[in-house]
Image 1 (spheres, helix red, strand yellow):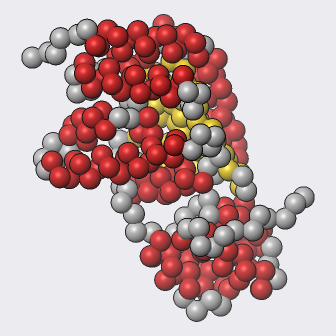
Image 2: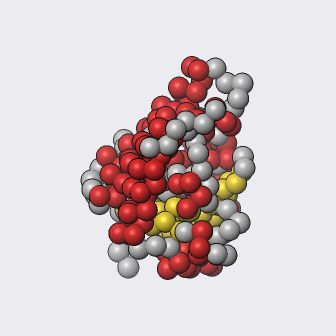
Length: 280
């Protein structure tokens, strides 16, 4: 089995913490599995920390400083790297997706954040936070737009999405906003930057009716799954659970329209919006 890939500690706070963790662990003569047992976690979890895939939580940082005799290093740097502009339930997922090599996403009612236009995002945030000021909405939109810029790279990550037909039919901000949003998705599809399929209403019941699903793969770690709902989210690394939800996504792809048919439907609905009169 090949050894762990060397990290560039300057690339991110996570990479720096991960490189130091690997160095401190090896200095103590511990394997990832042995260190994991001391923390009551799996060896693969330690590997994810070392590769920068997972963000180190304070509870583990404190224990690691004690076990590895690192004089508070992990506690100090964990608290610094944990400062996030994202909601608490989503912050680890948002940071983790930056290092993913492949992402598979299903969401039942919305266009996924990476694919949203600024106008579409703004309407969503106004619905989520009706008392927010224009400045606060603009800040939230900018944060979301920065997430989407990861797609500026022409080759990675591989992004596959199953859009529920509800996401393209539900009015968010009116016909002009929806037309622009769908044209944006269609452009990404035509440029082959994303692989997208529409799950039509006629597909009936399916395995992911309970909520959104996101699967992530990494160059130097096992895959992860993120399940989210209203103001809540869970990042899962249990292999059996990840495998089960990977099957769920595969079933969604089988039930969804083909890519050409999905593109045709998205562009047709966009055209309908372009000819639609705004509602009172």
